[in-house]
Length: 315
Image (cartoon, rainbow, N blue to C red; front, side):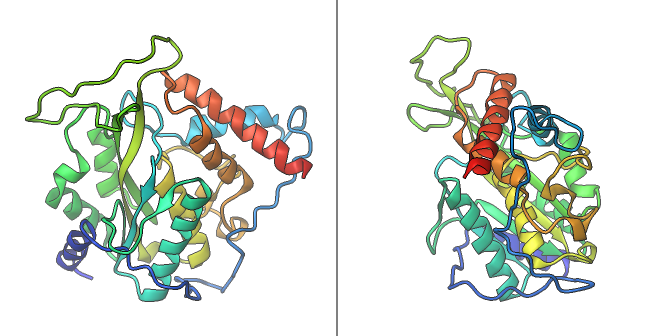
């Protein structure tokens, strides 16, 4: 695939329909052996989250470390999440694996209470497979710079992180755009270049909560097909779902955490989303969206993760 053809595909995706069809049997990606672990299989082993040690670490400490390690909000903001719906589109993969990625990400989103877009929706999760991923990522940013950096305060991470997205080789790379939003009206609460400042409703006076929440607006994901050896489409889909639904730091060390983010370091030991990954996603989408500080939000998420693990263990 040439860079030009990749950019043409991306241009279509930015206004594309969601090519949803009945689920098909996924094809393997580049694998050394074909493994078909169930994407829904997330067996846990914790029985008393109040006291038990998980990998020589108390569960409460693990939850807090999990949140602190993987979270990567926009500059000076809190972690964002999809407010209502997503529309997933995939370019440069054959029909079966592309559809599997769409279906899996959409399924997990719906489990979190986020509606999957109907056919004809405008893509806000754009997934592109590429043989020359750095060239394609760089071309995407140069061609659609306003989509990657809209110009509003608190919508993206730094230029250094964007440069990392363009140039650092990894099997999957991603870039999130989020929007500070008036929680009362759903309107954007940040000024873009050339606009007048927005009016924000003030309905609460509290050090703990604010009238502005952070919503995910668009996610760009580039898959380097030359770096997928040893993985299957089921594993890849779960990995993509994790970074599509949460602002994850691609550069944080996760080797000591039970997470799908270790997939490309230990493919055989990482069949899919772990129970801790699912606990994190559920907690992110259940936590108070109007926490005034990132620290308060992180504490909420860690506490909800423990509640979920405890409840699941007692069933």
